[in-house]
Length: 215
Image 1 (cartoon, one colour):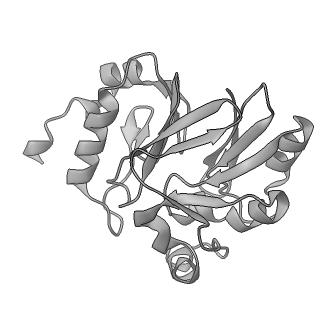
Image 2 (cartoon, rainbow, N blue to C red):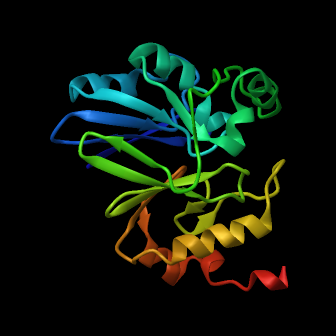
């Protein structure tokens, strides 16, 4: 699997294009661009690599990760996928949430809903859906053979906020425990900031070693 990172939007969201090099089928993860102009770099990359976008996937429903769903769907005619517990953040209510976060654009409703244990297949690639709530009720991570896309659950040296509406310290703790059980070699592609590995985070990220019971 070839992964291209394109940082987009006013909150510098990592939009990923993950592709099967054998078949050219690909997915877009978290299209956080608000306009077609902002999306140009992503579209240029997809067209330049002659990729066929099969799915548009959101790691969670916050506007900085979903605001470009409609633009990407119009361009690639691909369905939008999100966890069932964050589906309410898209569509009509998504407009309210977008305004709350200071975004003008919002996503159309999801076409397919995901749950823990589902798989996403494109070309010869299979990603497993891991429900990792805490930052939002429907946050997910997408696990491949050697990599994982963690959205705003796990960052290099930090984690996603839990003080936003519907955030949960308890859920975040459980999600981090899940991720910490993965092999050290697994490469982490987060929703913001640089890539890292599970091993690096277990060694250096204080949130993976802290005693949450004291909080």
